Each structure stands twice: as C-alpha cells, then as structure tokens.
Length: 204
Ligand code: CDP
Ligand code: CDP
Image 1 (cartoon, rainbow, N blue to C red):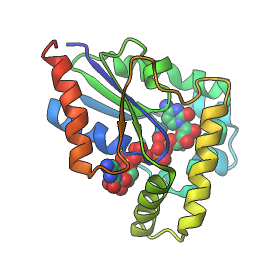
Image 2: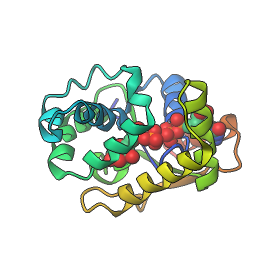
Image 3: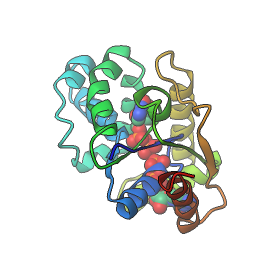
Image 4: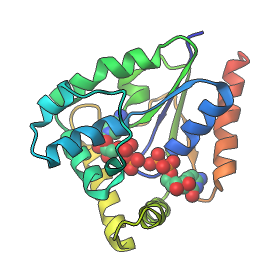
C-alpha cells in the first residue's frame, strides 16, 4: 500500500512526537526530514560547503546526537534557504514518501513540495512561547546550556527565516488539517492526529 502522512509546522510544535506515534500505530516508516538539514548544518559548522555536504549526505545515518544542538538548528535553517541544498535532498524524501507500506514524514514542505499528493496532511502549530518552553525543557534535559529567552529568540528567528525564504517556504497546504497543540497534552495531540489518519485509512 502507498499511503503518505505529511506533517508540517514551525519549530517544536510537536510534529516529531505526532509523527513517531502515527508510525508506531500504523507500522508506517518515519522520516524526520529536519535531520537532513541539521546534518548538512553540522557539516557546514565543521567547515564544509553546504551544497557539497547536501550532495554527499548519507540520509540513512542521521543519529549523531550533535544534530540536536541549538547552533546546528540555526545553521540548518540557514542552509535550508539554498535551492541547491533543497534540490539535493528532494529525491530521497520523495522516494521515501511513496515507499511501499506507508510513510510518515515531518518537516516544513512535505505537504506542499515533497509530497503534494499525500493522503493525509497535517499542519501542527503552537504559540511561540509554548514551543520555546518545550524546546528549552528538552535542551536542558539533554544538558545544553540555554536560557528560555535565548531559545524563544532562536525559535522565532528560525520560523521567520523558514517562512520568508523563496524556495519551499513553511506554509500549510490548502488541504492540510490544522492542529494547534498550545493547550493540548501530548496524548491529546496524538489522538487528534491519529483520528484524521484512521478516518482516511478507513476510506472516509
Ligand atoms: O518535531 P517538532 O520540533 O515539531 O516537536 P517535537 O520534538 O515533537 O516536540 C517538542 C517537545 O514538545 C517534545 O519534548 C514534546 O514532548 C513536547 N510536546 C508537548 O509538550 N506537548 C505537545 N502537545 C507536543 C509536544
Ligand atoms: O525540530 P525542529 O522543528 O525544531 O526543527 P527541524 O525539523 O529539525 O528542522 C531544522 C531546520 O531545517 C528548520 O528550521 C528548517 O529551516 C529546515 N527544514 C526545512 O527547511 N525543510 C524541512 N522539510 C525540514 C527542515
């Protein structure tokens, strides 16, 4: 069966949490596409050229814990502006989306550019402050030295860059279902998303 769940939205809205839960419940394969851009960002911080880094990336090994660092996230959003970087990462994501057995992808342009034909499109949002404080808690728990104000500033800077770029800007697809997780517990956000997927899988 070919069935794609496309999940887009701004930083720390809860996309990954929802995507992983859908993958667990359905058995679909999951791709966190942000990790592709983070991996390019990490290589750039190490001195590599962004386009060369994107073209030579091994998209199957994205488990470096440094990819979670706040400075890597910022560099990711800077390289994500470059059309050649996006082009180099496109085919892998498209093929993943239409693989046999179902796929869930989360990112910024999944429903608009990577897989406009996705059977389910979700646009996950939350207030700036809710997102920044969640990301702050995560980074602190991982031992990173960050402040809430600094995290809020970084999240806003990244959202602004992701929304304003010319190529594949962050946008809700016109047929996306919006889920605002500001006041939702993780389980409730997951339940809302799963009910959309289940309805579509049942042919409703
Ligand atoms: O993938 P994305 O950056 O959009 O967000 P995430 O990594 O899924 O979620 C960021 C953090 O927010 C995680 O620590 C989640 O547990 C938390 N979260 C939450 O507190 N409430 C939600 N409704 C969704 C996520
Ligand atoms: O987890 P979080 O939402 O904070 O970020 P991420 O999904 O890991 O993405 C890191 C950065 O990669 C984003 O700020 C975007 O600039 C870029 N990105 C993108 O341009 N397109 C995607 N499909 C996914 C990420």
